[in-house]
Image 1 (cartoon, rainbow, N blue to C red):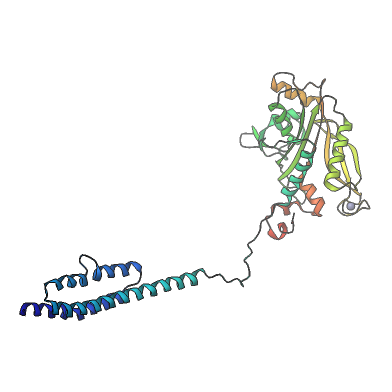
Image 2: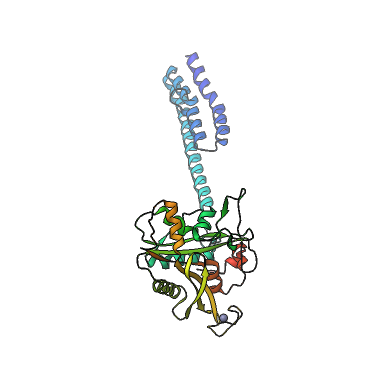
Length: 362
Ligand SMILES: [Zn+2]
């Protein structure tokens, strides 16, 4: 009896310390995991500190068990209530934090990042390609910028003493065997060599070309579009009709077009094409040097020597000058862009100055 009484008091005496420990631990809880840990420490089913005290009730007499049990239950309920309150508190804090973090102020103005545009020369090149694609042409652009004497000069009927081969005009690579192509006409030769079938050619070759020139109207790198049509029965009338259709599509049908006799080594006859000045309408201005006309395009009927050079390289007669004829033409992309936008310095296109480039919205 005396022992039981001592035990009952022993249990009750431990409760203030337990409450104190719980208070201290609860104050340190910062999240759900900490809370769960605390719950296990005091109420865990096997070794919770409160649970162990409940286990000791079994050794007490009825009356003492009732008194001590009541005390224990009171504390247990208190612990459970405070754990629950702290859980609700943590959850509310999480929600608040989330709301603060995720808040969207719908009244703020949007942020507009800088928007890139296509380069004005890219716009012109794609426009040229579209026009010729609509006329049934193929775009051939897989020919190299570093080429050799044969494709750039020899096959295009330029003998070794031709001025276009002069060191002043051409960039040669070390060793002198290779060069940077000076015109997209290399594309004509490479296409015919890579298509040794019964000849039926209708291509344009857009690309960068290189010459040792650098002033207000010349850039050491510029862009051309070459055209080549080969078939039985092609005549100068086909050339004329094609170029008229192309220039009308590009600039509009209101500008007059004229053809002048000219000279290129790889065409015979050769023709220069002028367009009525799109700046002054033909009356004469600074851009057209008071002539009322703008040079736009060089062309001509493919010289038989070009076909013969290709045949020699192929080792058989595929492009027989007795069977097929063709025409070729070429124009500068920068020139078209300069005419269209009234730009008088070609170097602006390659200066990467955004104040210039941002003016082109198409
Ligand atoms: Zn003019």
